[in-house]
Length: 78
Image (cartoon, rainbow, N blue to C red; front, top):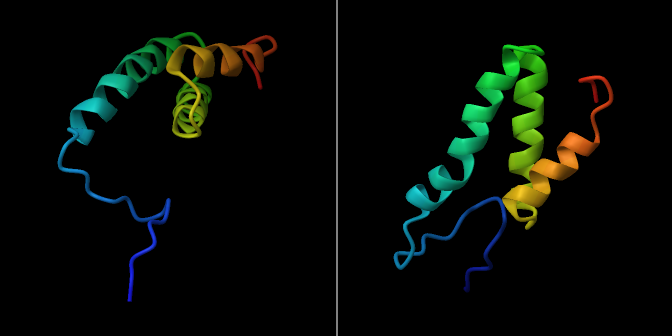
């Protein structure tokens, strides 16, 4: 029997510090979302940050993901 990697079950890669890498990418967007919530709503800000994180997970670079999600907004609504 052999193991086929699945996107639903991450493979542990000891040569990378996945925790630090993940937190370094998402922390600026979490901070952005908290500031954004003061001007919109927590629901809107969480949706925005989740969409950015999703796009990053799909392979977009963080800045491109941010710009894409911002481009979807019209009058602070999706």
